[in-house]
Image (cartoon, rainbow, N blue to C red; front, side):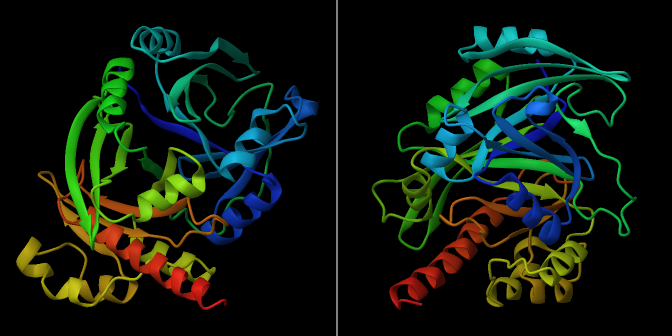
Length: 362
């Protein structure tokens, strides 16, 4: 079974309107649709945001028995569903269940005037599930009968963020290999990359699984308990278990995206100037001039197919758990061998500064 890509992600949040305001004002998303009791979604309020091909659904529970209420109570705002697009949701559902996933929602068709959407849901990791989505008809109708699409003025500026490139997942110690096998058996993913990452006295194991066509990529990470506790341990403690640590948003112009988001108040994890001093010797010639990368802290790496440019945004989460990444690919299909440690080193510098401020009582 192959998957077309990450169709959308759904966050469970305490206040959908507040979360939407931040993503729209800071990251350039637009409100595209809404749902609630009046659209056949009792007990919840959902807002659909879009930019490029990125779709983010924000859901708040309106009554105590809604799963979003329990999720937010335990984890805070976070990713509850990573949806996979597919050309055959029924077969994908059957294959996933046969491969070890737990059935959550059986296949169901949502019919609209100009579109038909078939969905089914299975378990993933921790409290995160996977919605399998098969779409037919008009592209603009997200979930007929449940999400009312909204008409708005065309955007004044071009979309700087185009796709959801990948999701990074923090796992509890000792569960990495089993989780990788789960994605291989239930979804037919391939293990395409693995690495041991050292950041100061910390250590973490990373394995990357990807659907056969490359549409869906998950980076799976677990801490090394033989080393000093670090940011993965922090995530697991503050999030109260495994979950999505960050989502990477693909851009066709990461420099412009960093400038635009920075102008709206988004902060980015700092990168020391020494990183760029050895760049030429480490990677050779790069497509984007170093003088454009250095002042913005953008990192560059390569795999067998091309180059990639990446940067972490500072977390806006009250628990300092979830954050966003920006990535621009120049032919690269996977990940290089130096950016992942460099990205996590940048995140560790950010968190160290936060810890110092907290200890100073500021």
